[in-house]
Image (cartoon, rainbow, N blue to C red; front, side, top):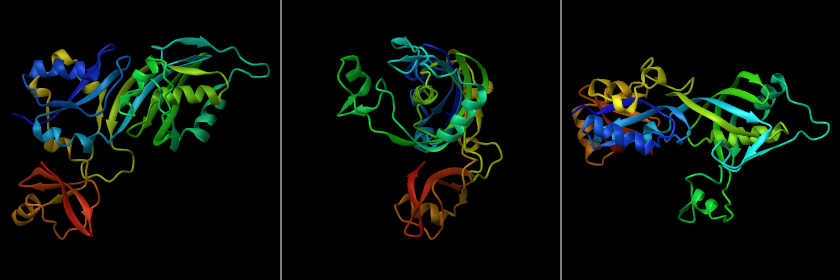
Length: 296
């Protein structure tokens, strides 16, 4: 079988698990998982790992950046921060003007770029006290989700006709676009919620070290619907890992790493150790040496 990745264009209404289940049936392969969930209300690029070797890379590949096209509706708030919740209109307070596009972009520039502190929505799958936050929220139990640091690499206005604001957002793993929409609405004094979301790209951030020109940068334009998944669409794992720093290993070095012994090499995390022109091990630095974090 082929170990690698397949690009899926997830339809609205599907959970990420639904999409995985459909692709499992289409390919006749059970060893399939996704590299970052999409909410049922969102559409777009879902990258699936196919085969046991690819599944071992899920943790590594899940840290890639994601690019979204987000539709934010200003002038209202939602209990879930998206259109699935209870929506309440927010009238403009006296003295508050409808923000123009320059004000919006300046607010984004000042408050929502780089590493920021973000509180995930109460209606999220984050575990709080051993239970999903959304389950507590549905019961009316107060949910106190701590803020966490996330990274937003770029956020630009695509179009704006109040109350509809369309953004292009490139962000790191763990970022909630729903929270971004809500928080932006609060900063603009209009309220806001996420009315639509489509993931368009997954890949390394600009300036990240890489050894392949375009490997590891995937676009929804090349994705297929879950039902149309076929084996020729599965990209070989060796092609998918070409964007990561590479270290070619000798037979002796590969033997050492396979048996838990570190080798005298200086690496950064993550570095892919290649043996016989195939990705063989995920390496990380340890005491000035290269340590096998995971053997593929």
